[in-house]
Length: 263
Ligand code: ADP
Image (cartoon, rainbow, N blue to C red):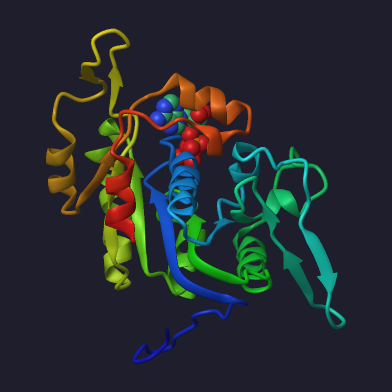
């Protein structure tokens, strides 16, 4: 909230949202969107009311992962130049709002500059009927750019979860993202190391790939808590390609632990 903050420009939203968690990464392609959908699914399966705001405007991928990319959000005109959006619900009832649910053709690129993107993001956040939510997860644009900054400044985040790969963990850009959040007094809940290891199909042994150093050491370097290590998993890729992320059979990963860390 704005209490005690100078020049506060925290935006209003519709509905009753208890916690807003940003999911962010240093760069693209590390699995930020994947992890956002997994977290949402886990929270939903744990009995919470969950929504996702796909704020990765230039690369919105959330609808496809849930297989709802053919659906469109309902837009209701209220007043002369104001609209209200009804989010699209996934199979298990996660409420999703994404630019790809508002534009006609999901393959159309967004050819907008920063201020336009910021405006649309504000609308998607503020004018969506979220209803009652325990958790709204925001799939943030990667890095420390304009849009990520806007999200951190204008949305009342309870905290952020950082997603990184082993190589990326030690890179300066992840550290920058964490420092940016801390400078804005946003709680960095911890880091999830994605694509940490592969698991041997026959013996079950975990083999770390991309880095010999343990994930804990990387988290320590970043000065944040290690929330989880996720394997490279072909089953996950297959589910994602089919838009069935909610049916992904979770094995070998301590998912309960992640939920406990987050709630
Ligand atoms: P980002 O949101 O950071 O750009 P994505 O979530 O879109 O990244 O993931 C990038 C690519 O990596 C996708 O093709 C996704 O299927 C793949 N991927 C992400 N996490 C995993 C994982 N744990 N195992 C296998 N493939 C993964």
